[in-house]
Image (spheres, rainbow, N blue to C red):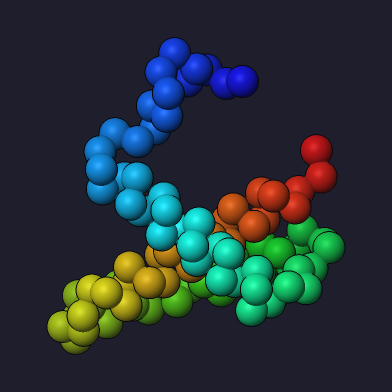
Length: 93
């Protein structure tokens, strides 16, 4: 395994971290069910992830400058993280 093998699940530094990771995994499962066809080329995979990232930037701007609810930013960040995982899962080594 990796360099963090000294403890079980050392990346979970708090209960909140574990909840966040589970929410990202849930988002990933939902995305795969909704969009089962995933591009085979890396450029289109990263473009999808980048689109989600752009939506997170927009949500952050709307929160900071227009007072919109931060929950929209959290949703977009979860979707971005899920797409990052999906890209990593489908990368050829």
